[in-house]
Length: 530
Image (cartoon, rainbow, N blue to C red):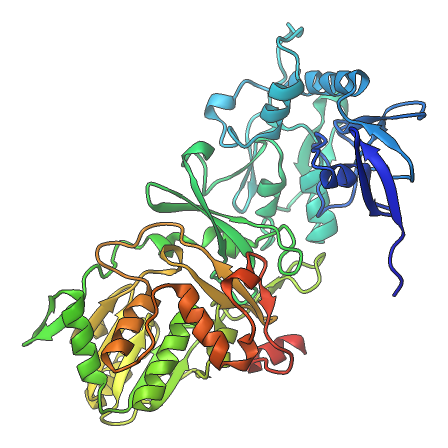
């Protein structure tokens, strides 16, 4: 495959080289210059309808729309010339003619492109004295509300549903100053990926019902993360306020999810805020569990494990680091490990090859398989009489209570390491409270075998600790010579001992991730590729 021809041009006095066919808008980004725009989005077909990205090109007869004009060798582009700024000021004045002064009550306030560009380049006052157009708010179905008064008709939502979701339910209805975004008769935004229209909207015209009036953008703390709701491993940003997760948004990654996040990933975050969390370590004293210090609980867990075979039932939503340390426990005392996965219907995003809401509704199925845990639909069948049952963040929801009682009865001891304490777990010998994925740092391995980092977004409740820290102490009590202070230390040890992860560390992973070594994939990865 031949390399693409490179084109040299000058943008605002900065010379850049970009591949032939690149638009002026994208070339300006290479030069570190953002050309204002509304209708353009790198994940959508070009429309060129907003006229906000007009720039001046030397020797050209008129201003050019930067989103729809390819670069040419030797071009000299002026983004901030008087002519270009005057044109954009005119566009902004037109957009604001019927736009209400809703900023104080609008969910988009603080992250609104109309606010930003008006502040940067708009008129200081309005020449418009007539009454503004008014249309009532409309429920578009799903999680989406439409506020037509704020709409600037960029058509991003229409193009996403038609060209990316392949479900053309939206259109531009009417014409001129009466034009609005409309739905086709009998259709709603119930597509599994329809929530992306809220993300794509550059103003506050499309709103999420879930996030409505929850917080202002400047009140939120944001952390780079990975969606934990299926094996696709979409890059996401967790946004929290006062230590409560209030929103999940997509984070761009061309190798995984482009710019998009499904509605399941976007809306299924409330379990990260559960109130029924275990906040203190517990050890059985007589007929009841009693809260104790961490060192007492760790010693009790080590005593329960020492000299016995262990059966580890782990959640495939745990990080690679935690699963690795659980595998080290198995290696030290002997035993096996297993996991089960909640299932759901697949929902591909047809316009993006390889992107889908996957049937396996857990983030780290591939990581669990690569680290030696076996997949099963009958999670307690591997427990032999006298084994220690170590349950790691698995609530056994949907499992027959009689089967759980029988399994607990034949176990030599029960050790629970988890975020919650389900009713059956009250017979445990030891309970170690751990953080959920929003409260710790770690890595997941997605369906393509891409290992990706996620960062801590909020604090864990009470005395709960990251899973890797709790298990590192248990291993130390069992005689493990290696000390793990950070998740990066655990991952380094994992990479040193498991061929699929060889050569990886947190620095090389960055926030884009890296693929496991060729030929070392898990069964789930092989199934996904067929």
